[in-house]
Amino acid sequence: MKKVEREKHVAFYIGSLHKGGAERVFVNLADFFRQEGYRVTIVTQYQFPKEEEYDLPKGVKRVLSELTDEEISNNRIVNFFRRVRKLRRVWKTEKPNLVLSCIGKNNFMTVVTTMFTKTKAVVSVVGEAKEEYPGRLMRFLANLLFPYAAGIVLQTERSKYFFSKKIQKRAVILPNSLNPAFIKPRYDGVRERRIVAVGRLDANKNHEMMIRAFAALKDKYAEYTLTIYGEGELHGYLENLAGELGLSERVFLPGVIPDVAARIERAALFLLTSYSEGVSNALIEALATGLPVISTDVPSGGTVELMRDKENGLIIPVGDQHALENAMDRLLGEPTYADRLGREASKIQERLAPERVNRLWKSLFDGIMAAQK
Image 1 (spheres, rainbow, N blue to C red):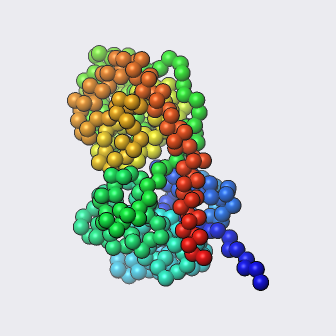
Image 2: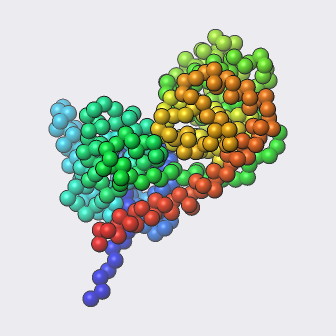
Image 3: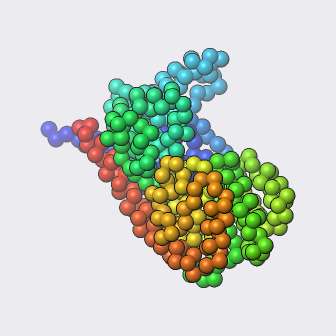
């Protein structure tokens, strides 16, 4: 009797669908696998108001795994074991062949809750590894649990060295695909006298250094403005800083806005000044847009995975305001050179095109699911 092939079913486990880089990548991957004919489930701990989350692709099921008010105990240890049991019940009920998780403890939960089930775990580290797993205990747990996963995905070669040699040997480097909204011809007209940045307004993004560097050049480039798209706890502080530096009319913080691609494509310069990143989606998108880019060399290696210094952008040391000022001065003062870097940067559209990157993920998933049979 001919064996009936089981429908391929993949699940994605993440904290929420709140608008952020990792969340968007998971939603896009889910949509790709749905279009490829897979059954797809997204499991999240939390659910935010609809306007604060990415839309779920049609045909993708969503399951919430967080404890309800009735299930929560006053005892944290009891709650932990109840969360484990509930998530394990989700896998047993939904029966995915494979679960992809990301970000810190989510990876631990996925490995632990899929043990001794038919569901295979694939863990992914999307940020700076030492920040996702800070301290000796978290690093120990990562090195202890990750080998039990069927797949381990990292984003940079440099990030491998945070983990044990056993994990280094098994880890696969897979990039994020480019947001389809950024796949279009490069703007070829006259550049607006605008410098732009995109990112959460927090201490790690180091927008303070960006504003101070702009202030140092404000008289030399008096017609230029700086716009930082994003929201966060430092909004008020950065607004006040701009005022103190005499830049209230030249530094703009419009918050989170739709259609970022259209807002930044004509700018003269894009800046990323973070202390740490995984592989920055904002940086990928700026390069794909063909903007002249200056970025810090983040410890994870995320920047050097995307950029070649002085070929498709300029790379500066983390936290070096003087280097940032010099790089800005060069690109604003030499528009022909800046344009050459931008043209080279736009070629990343081919390298990170969704159809190419998504096929790499499909190959990984199919290989793991084939080994189940």
